[in-house]
Length: 269
Image 1: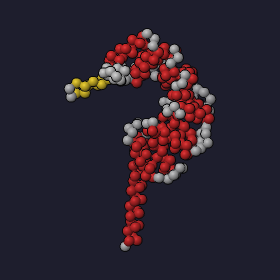
Image 2 (image 1 turned 180 degrees about the horizontal axis):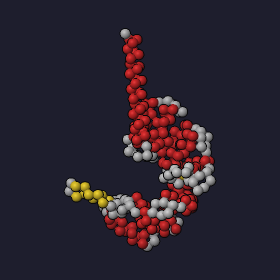
Image 3 (image 1 turned 60 degrees about the vertical axis):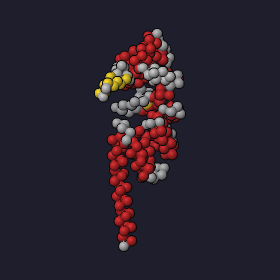
Image 4 (image 1 turned 45 degrees about the vertical axis):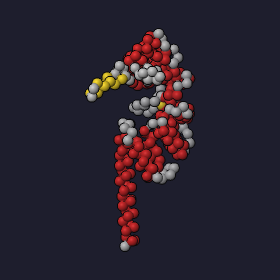
């Protein structure tokens, strides 16, 4: 409550003191929270007069994150199991260990963590592809487990119903390409829009692509709107690509508009 200022004055430093006390007494939710904070490097920003002084009480440190996540995961915290799985999945602060990541994502899924479910789908991955996801992707790309598009799609669908934006996006891609499910552009659009509503910028770009390709309905103006939204998201994964698409489509629409005016002017004369 002190960390967020809920019902009391916000005091991050004091909040962290209590979290550390609870974690030292083996409180698994406190351990997970500190592990997450150290993994993300979340702290506070202080201001002094007009000069902004940024500093964090919790620096980004994967080794410390691991030290808190491990006991919480061992105690059965599904959220800690998912986050610890991501460390092993990418070798962040620990040696890369896909088998351990798979075990943790599976345990997390059984514990009710939707992101663990999603990550299992992402473990079916082509060599050299780096994923930020989990079990669903492991099945889709065959990463440490047998490639199984149908299983991956089912895992994405399960996680998407629990409002995991990446899961809705990946499921949209599978409907768009017909991998693990029957190709269905309307369902692809539905899942992309859900991911977009949940803040996933790449989904906005793919909505634009569907409007451009006419797989659902051709609407270049709608496509431009979605490309621009994706470009303005400042998401390094898609903003540059979306900006280029928006620029090209805008130029095309301006050329078409000018051509229509020129043709109309000839008939008016």
